[in-house]
Image (cartoon, rainbow, N blue to C red; front, side):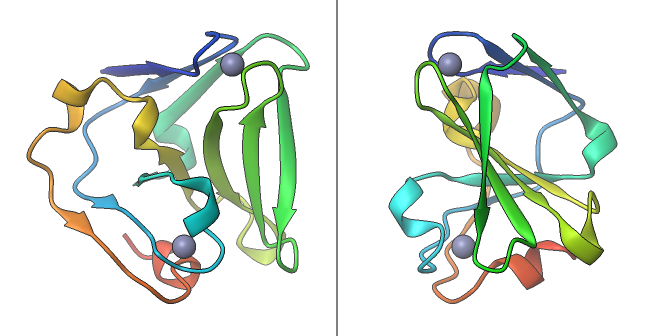
Length: 120
Ligand SMILES: [Zn+2]
Ligand SMILES: [Zn+2]
C-alpha cells in the first residue's frame, strides 16, 4: 500500500500498489501543472478528504477533470469524465514519497497524452 497526501493533508490517497510506470507529460495540457502521473484504475485509489477540500477543473472539452486541493493548492489527480467516465485515474506522483517511486520507468510524451492514458 502506498500513502500520499497533499501539502496540508486535507486530501490523503491510499493506493493499492506501485504504478508500472510514471508519465512526465509534456503536452500542452499537463505541462503547466508540473505533475508526474501514475495511472490506476479508479478502484485502486482511495481518496480520503476533508469535505469540500478539493476543486475540480475541466480540461479542454470536459472529458478530463483535474483536481486540486483548495487549501494548499497541490495538484491531486486527473480523472476521466464524459463517455470515458471513471475508466482511469492519473494520480500526481509528486505527492508520493520518493522511495515509493524510485527507479520506475518514466515516459515523456509531448503530444496529447490522455487518449493514450486510457490504455495502461
Ligand atoms: Zn492540501
Ligand atoms: Zn498530458
